[in-house]
Length: 284
Image (cartoon, rainbow, N blue to C red):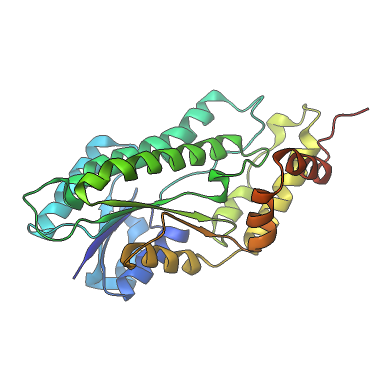
C-alpha cells in the first residue's frame, strides 16, 4: 500500500483529500494541530489513516512527524506529500496589521517549506530507502496568478507558493521527485463561515471601506456556491497517480469567466472591471 502525507486534514480540502485518497488505496498520514481534530477521520477511515499532531510552522514538530512516518514505512518511500494547510488573511494592504501579514506568510509559505524539508528524505532524497520517488502537491489558488483586492496578504502568499513550487520542481528533478500545483477557485468549505465572522470594523474609517464590504459579501456568497471539496480531492488523486501529471491544475467554477478571460484580457482592462464592480474608481 502506498502512503501519503496530507497537511491540514481537519476540515475542507484536506479532509476531503484524506478521505478520497484512503478510499482509493492510499494510507494517509494526516496532520492536525489538535488530537481531537483527527477523531472524525480516524473513526471513518480506521487503519487507513494515521494522525500526525503538529503545526506546520513548528520545525521540531514537523521533523518529529517525519520520524514517525519513517518508522511506519519500514524502509519504503512516501508516494506523496500534499501541502494543504493554510489560512487566509484579508484587509486593505494600506492598513492591514503587519503581525497579520507576517502570520499569513509564516503559515502559507514558511509552513510548506518546513514540512517539505522534513519529508523530502522520505520522498526520495534519502538513497537508502526503497521504492519510486514520491510527488509533492502544493495547494495554491487562483490567487496564485490573479490578485483580488482586499485579499493582498493571501494573494502574496499564493504567488510566493507558485514561484517556490516552480524552483523546487526544477531542483528536485535530480532526485526524480515531481512538484505539482493545484489551484482551486471557490470551494464550498467551512472557511466561508469563518470569513463571514471577519470583523471589518478596524477599516470603517477608510474611504474604500464600502468597496471592501461589498467584496467580502460577494466573496463569501460565491464561496458557498463553489465546488465541493471532493472535486479538488479528485484532482489531488490525479496529480499523485497520473503517468504524466500536469505541472499545474486549475480547479475553478465558471472556468471561462473566472479563469480563462481574466488571464486573456489586458491587465488594465481587468483593473477597470474590478474597480467598476466594487466602486473603486477614483472620485471625480
